[in-house]
Amino acid sequence: MHLAHLRLRDFRNYTRLDVDFAPGFHLLLGDNAQGKTNILEAIYLIATLRSFRGVGGAQMVRHGQRGYFVGGKVVGQGEHDIKMYWSSPERSLSLDARPIRKLTDYLGVLRTVVFCTEDLQLVKGVARARRRFLDLLLSQTHAGYLPLLQRYTRALRSRNALLKQPRPDPTALDGFSRELVKSGEEIIRLRHELVPKFSPRARLAYHRISSEAEELRLEYQPSVKQDFSVELAQSRHREGAYRSTLIGPHRDDLQLLLDDRSAAQFGSEGQKRTLAITLKLAQAEYLTGLHGSPPVLLIDDIMGELDAKRRGAFLPLLQLAQSSHGQVFMTATAENWPEDPERELQRWRVNDGTLLKESK
Image (cartoon, rainbow, N blue to C red; front, side, top):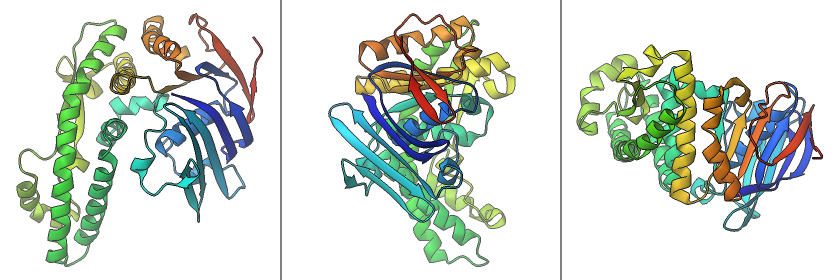
């Protein structure tokens, strides 16, 4: 699987861009704030319909313009043409010239894993970041998960809106509670099944790049302990005070433990950085194992910050991508690019919203 063509119009600092990419290793070189990361963001947007920077559509529109267009041609089992447009009043998404009505008909056309400085929030940040990590992994590997999560989210929003009223309608509240429990129990089950499958890959990846001997353990912590329906009913009095749904998958967490101690609380900065990289490496390897081919890797300006051992942890993935005609996009400045990877590079120079291929 690879991205064969990328087209941008009024996206971030790109007025117009039409570029072809072959399989292999693409190095995007340039000074800071020239648009390197914007290319990775556009590719990730094609794959997941969201920015890895955690921003909305308005932040991705070029200054002074009404909307942006992102398009691409993806080559995998076949060829697929993708077009998306975003503006405040209008949004459209099409695959092979057909409008997308259900996201399950789209997601999976391009699979990506991004490595970026924001990954540290998986370790240091709030539980929401780790829930989103689990949800993305399940969306990439389980066709029915995203619509299930959407149903749960709609029921949760409606239920919370009712709870904010002075006198919530008990019949309506019961209806939303039933939908919350029905979809929520399935989400909990799928998360419970995922973590033991994913954990061994994370432990192996951590051992490959850690210079210390601590043991990594991932522990899924659902807020529902036994029976969602019973515990939801028992929390009803407290919900009246907080005016919000207090238990359910939206309150779950993924505990990251080093020698049975919280990495967020007790880990050093080096351990936290190693663990963040570990989770993404394990994600890429997990997807490769399930689908038989590696996802497109997007590595944003982090290699220069890593020591030789941590950089070396990427080598198996990079070699697999090369041998299977996969694709890697890596950004760097000339100053922080480590010259140690001995592989064929397709070098691109990024300068103020322009992208030019460098001759070898």
